[in-house]
Image (cartoon, rainbow, N blue to C red; front, side, top):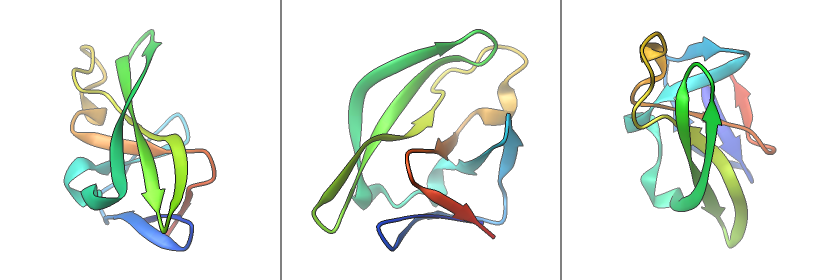
Length: 93
């Protein structure tokens, strides 16, 4: 699977986990040179607190386009050490 934005692969892995329709990529498959931490956090009732990352590709910014769960709640371990995408990031196989 590939996650692409602005014509650039931001993550690629054959090991994704699909949760609620979102592909969660291993964090180590993420091109860290393309992301910046965000101060945005949201709460999921069963996965816990999500942290967000902003994509920066070829001078364009996609705020909070990726999220991950630094400390997933019990029962959501499958998203541990994984990142998912939205806001125009295309996930294809």
